[in-house]
Image (tube, rainbow, N blue to C red; front, side, top):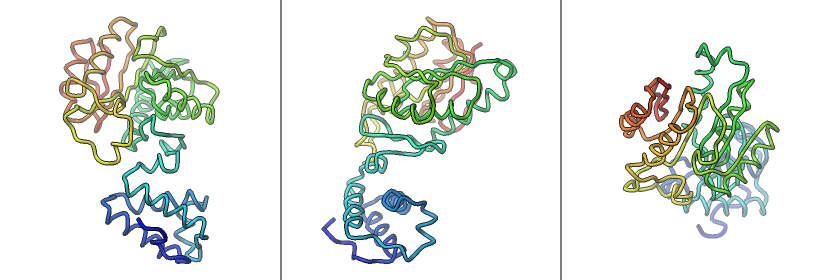
Length: 283
């Protein structure tokens, strides 16, 4: 994008239309949402306030910043990497190139865990529930659980030291009750857990990434054995520990039948499938 392609002193609704068109012309399907997020970050007010106040104007320095943001988005750099944070389950998380951008669909994993605790007669009456978040990344899943479930502890681990640093920064914003550490799956795990949640790399190497995903860490996306290698390894390690009652795993929907077979071979039955989330219960 050329300098000053967006005219100066445009009313905010006209500026939004210009910016959305620019992103759409560059195959950014979430153009309107992205533009509103960027403007929220500049004005430091909600998108609702922006849309209801057409008298708003971007001053020259802010217009240049907005154009800089748009230039990056045109290259398909994820919006969270442009502004440095993302929202998940109503919470704000610091993110960078070392962690995956939290996905809205992964919020279902948190919802299903909360439902299980509410409906399972054993967990519902237990004074304290121990939960492990494997492959925590930015810490979004584990922290969201901590913020929404009483009488629980959530340990969070990741193989990446850089990821655990980001997770710790996010954790201290919301709680003092956290334990985040580096581990290759369950290698450094020595506690017993009631529930394990995991959103591990599950995309087969043969899959082609969209442009946005090429800016995220490949090691957090791809896995061998049709994307199931790390889940196979996780089940193998679970066999050497005190088995948790439930496992909640995110995967491609096409992989769920194979994942269920792996679980069955390791002492778990399929309890429920909801979109990309498979829930397994110990036999």
